[in-house]
Every structure is written in structure tokens, then in C-alpha cells.
Image (cartoon, rainbow, N blue to C red; front, side):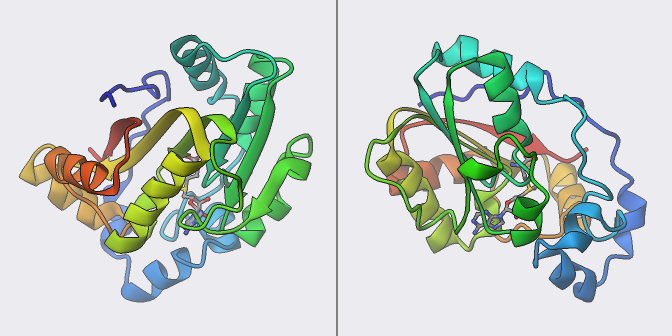
Length: 217
Ligand SMILES: C[S@@+](CC[C@H](N)C(=O)[O-])C[C@H]1O[C@@H](n2cnc3c(N)ncnc32)[C@H](O)[C@@H]1O
């Protein structure tokens, strides 16, 4: 289990926090449906347009090197949305087998065509996969959308279905100012801690994989 930033190549966008300051409870409820409004509606309710732009290619390269991934390995993305990372894994590691799971019917319906056959609808805390069936299980900015008990279950599920590597990235904050900014910005997270709090949850749930933080600045 290591703290390692495997998204260090991922572009950091300057987030228009002010646009979100006006986010009312109703917009958060809309976002939590993870439907069209969240992915492709306006910025007050989510991404403001979740489109493929190749930014996951460098992340796939980084994970390939870090975990020694190669043809024949099986990779699962929990909270895969439209399958961008899985699409890029297939480009970067020809012969790799991918699978994705997401709760959003909208995201899966609008997923990249080449990976769509490998995606299933479901929830992170009940993965419909056999024990030890993947060489790498990743989950990026997803498990914090579950309450603490279900979040722990989701981590246990990552542990169960992996036979080797796991990588989870979650919302966190290092300072009080970052916590306040995060709480103004975020729409869907219900479980979030500082790094020590996350490490406790990882330990309590028996999660032994790697991890890193998404910090809102
Ligand atoms: C912030 S997005 C991250 C998407 C993608 N991993 C990325 O980093 O671009 C959160 C994703 O988690 C999915 N999600 C939310 N709750 C979930 C759950 N209980 N089980 C599985 N996926 C969930 C949402 O539909 C959404 O695709």
C-alpha cells in the first residue's frame, strides 16, 4: 500500500469555484443522479461537458510502467463513466483486457464505442466479478460518492476482485482552506477526509492497494 500520484500527468484545470458557490441543494441532488446534467449539462451541476480529449493516455502509460502491465492482463475501472481511461489502456497496451462498471446509465450509453461491450451498470460496493479476477483495479474519484459504510465496502470489493494491484483516488484536503474550498466546490461526495482519515478507512476496510488524493484548489 503506497501513496503515489499516478495522475500526475493529468491536467489540473482552474476550477470556477464562484460559479458553484451558488449551487443550491437542488443542483446537488440533480448532480447525484449522474445523468446527462452531471456529465454534459452546465458547469453548476457537474462537468459542463465530459468529452474525450486524450488526457488519459499519459495516465495509462504511467500505470503501465508502474504496474508492469502487458498484453493478457485484465484491468477493471470502477466508476469508469464513458470509458475514456479504458479506451486509452487499450491503445497503450495492445492485447490488454478491460472491464468497467458505473452507476450511470447515461455515461454507459454515451461511452466510447470500442469499450462499450466491456462495461456494466452497477455499484462500486457490489462488484459483479469473481474473486481475484483482475490484475489491476482502479477507481478514480468515485468511492467518495458512497456513504462511509458503503465506501468501505467498495474498498473491500476492490480488494476482493484484484489478484495483484489496486489504485484508488479520492477527494481530500491538506489544509483547512482546501477543505472549505472543496466543500464549496463539490456536488456529489458524501465521504471525505484528510489523508489520515482516509488511511484509517483504508486500514479498517482491509484495503492494501495504492492511493492518492484529488485536492480542490
Ligand atoms: C467524478 S466521476 C469520475 C469518472 C471517471 N472515473 C473520471 O475520473 O473521469 C464519478 C463517477 O462515479 C460514478 N458513480 C457514482 N456513484 C457510483 C457508485 N455507487 N458505483 C459506481 N459508480 C458510481 C458516476 O456515475 C461517475 O461516472
